[in-house]
Each structure stands twice: as structure tokens, then as C-alpha cells.
Length: 305
Image (tube, rainbow, N blue to C red; front, side):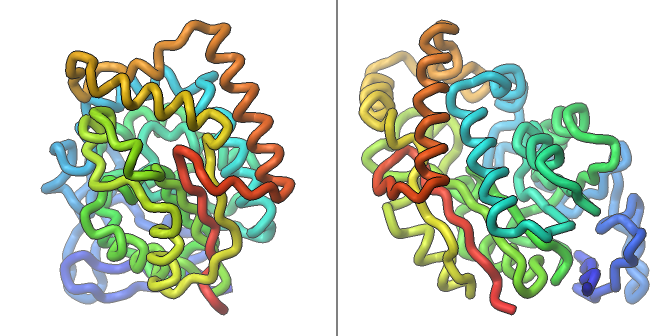
């Protein structure tokens, strides 16, 4: 199997990745132009000028997020759905990259879901990577980079981007980069917020560029060259409650990006009920039930061989 190439951010020259090497070694130097990639705390920095700026997401938002993902009614069932889809559609995959891994909540679940040769988390903001490194297995690799400039070609079996594309103005450029980073036959697993009518103050605080129309992500994925393998909604059962919550938020006092979304602060009993409802939804989705409407859209796609 091809190990792919890492790319120099200065001259774009490719360098073959050795089977026992990291995808992006610490303090890597380009063999063509001698450009050295900056490293901070052992993490290669491919977009240092954007690190921990308010681009894509306010870095202050990682702390409240990291404290509430475990056990949360929305995050835990979604992890089960995502890891199940990876296992179903790409059972032989060995190398995984998560674009925009944030606090590492999904990355750690993916790492535990099967045996990997490489598992890599990327994030624009080192503030998120600080949490991801604590959650991850010691063998995981981390890199700071811009999702629209992934410095690798034909290097991964699966690339995931979970609630990332909506933060990026040129999401089709990011999809093209994901396509290029994948080996032929490799797959992309994507999650985005769905339905523009759900747009609320929470989207603005999160620095979202859009909520996707029902078929919008599929259309963009196909234009990038992918074949669609799976597409379904998530948070379908709770859509009426979600819509009501978002409508009510328009009348609430503004919250800042470092404050907690009210949907994170539910009473434990209510959280357990909602988590149970979404776990049931995930089971039905994996059994093939179509869910045309829901707060999120999940798409699995394959790069042709």
C-alpha cells in the first residue's frame, strides 16, 4: 500500500512518507527547498499565523466544550454513529486523519474503535490540541494546520471532519484537500449542521458560515470527486425540541463564545432521556431507516480507486 507524500508548505514539493515515520515529523525540513516547519511543544505548525486567532472558532470555546462532551446526550450517540460508519464502510482502514479534531472527543472514540497504524488529529488552534493530547493515546499524532491546505497527498485511508466544514468560508476547497489527502478507495466521513431555518445565535457565536440545505453537502462532495455511500440526518427524533430551543434563543440575552451553550447545561434526568432517544435513532439509522430531516447531516463518501 502506498504511504503517500507529505507536502512542503513553502515550495509544495512532495516527500514520500516512510512506513515507520510520522506523517509530519516534529521540526520537519523540506528536502527540496530546505524550509523548516515550525514546531511548538512538539506539534508541527503549518499555519502558525492563524493559530489561536478568532478564525473558524474562538479558542476560548474549547474549555467549556471539553468539560461537557462526555455523557452529553448529543455527543455520545453521535460518536457511536460515526465510529460504526467507519467500521462498516472502511473495515480495512489503517490510517486515520481527523480534520478539526477540537478537544479530541471524537478522535479518542475513533482510536478505540479498531486497530490503527496511524491516528492523526489536526486543528487550526493549539488551544484545542492541548485538550486532544490529554484525551488521546500516546501513539496519536497531532498537527496544527488549515483545513484548506492539508500538506499530504494519498496518505490516509479515512479522513473525518465532524462539524468543521460549516466554519470554513471555502468549504469546497477543504473537501478538495480531503479528497487529495486520501488514498484511492479511501473514505471521508463528514458531519455538518443542517437546515438554514435552525440558524440561531448559537451558530453566530460558533462562527458558523452556514447551515447546510438538505442536499447541499452531498452535491459539494460529488463535485469534489467522491462517490456517496451513506447520507442521513442526525438528531431527527429531537428536531422539534431543537427547533423550539433555537427559536427561544433568539430572545435570550447574548452569550459570549467562551460561555457554555444552554443546551450543555441540562438536568441529568433530562439529559439521560434525550441521550436514550438519540441512541435509539442511531440504531435505526444504522439499520437503514431514512431520516430526511434532522439537526445534522452525516455523509460517508469514497474516493474512486
